[in-house]
Length: 581
Image (tube, rainbow, N blue to C red; front, side):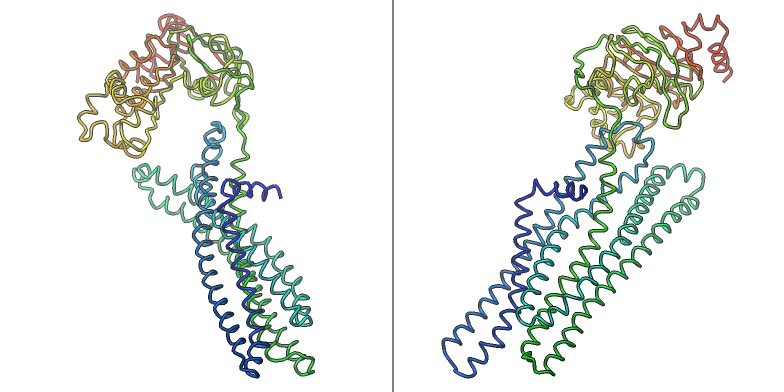
């Protein structure tokens, strides 16, 4: 019931449109109920009276009734137009609202959420699932209303015409409803399975397309096709089970609809044989009502099918919406206006959800404007330490402070606005070079973008492209070299102008010459900023004010490049290995 209430809330912003849709659907049901009544009156009373008397007044009444029926069907056609147009538009607007909610909510979720769910599955929940919900949002209420009103009105009219046949039909109704409800639960489970398998297919396609170059490099196209076929076959089997259940539901519903016709024929025939006041004209009227009665039953069947598919999608939609971020702003969190950039890690400890301890007892102070390098073996927690500083994850032990205040006392937005990060795998959005640089500060002017590119030593190369700053970078920046992507990311940070800078393996994927050129950009970028550098290539950290060596046991060495070499410890071993390489 709570799920239905949450579903119903999405109608509130569109209440006038919803009421128009429902009002028109009610008028359609009214016309469908009125036609058999008028037909019964014409056959049983008006036509016999005209035959006997030839009264001009009765003929005039007949013309008026025919005009009324014609007007009713014209009105019905107009109402159906509104139902089909505005009703579908209502569904689309509700779908857009839901997509806005799920996309906005996803933006608030922490790294730990993205660690566990695949992009393709998220895409399915924001597209195909919501389309099914849109269909339910439009057709569901009107189908339910039209069906309910038509069945209720038809039964009421049939009781007045011949209560014995109506009673016989009413006895069959509980069996019909029992069958519908029983089959509904099977449809619900199989429908959810179909949604899950469709999400798996989307995830597989997204992964394969993103890794298409890798697949071709290893000549593994056939393997990718086999992987896809596994998911595709799983979807096929899920759809097979769903259609089997749906076929049972539809055929069973049609069977009960046919039984209503049989009951009218059987009971009506018995009443005619016994001369119980039931004649052929009444029988014809009854058959019209059976037609008006069975049509809504088919609508009910369609409604339940849509309901199962739509609510299965809505359940999956709510799973994401009910996922709460474990990283939230404290009640009195303050906005950062300016920072000196002093960073303190106090007895920091952290473990990921798999329980593996990554950091333990980390104590480190970075003075404003200083450049500190973090080195050590892979998996030692260097990147994790920087992610904790930006609150991509929250510390589990100890605390991190900036300018003497716990980072959890700052708003997340202002904290992240004050820290710039350049990573090894630079992500560029599909769009122009201008748009990607401006991502560092969305309100920047074209002149400021150009200035940032000049400072990042990428302007001259951009000007050599045919469309210069309007040149498209391609999916994830595929049209650019690694060095060009890196310098565009540096230009972004010049625009952002943060007081704290993190360079996370920023040059490890580049050749030595390109690395040397980009290092000059980094030197310019880090000037006057508190800078944390993570690097495996120790040549890039020789000029750091302090070098921190971290492994699974925590901080094991610290000092300048020369002092650490003199200690002849872990750092010296790393450095010698680098020279050999």
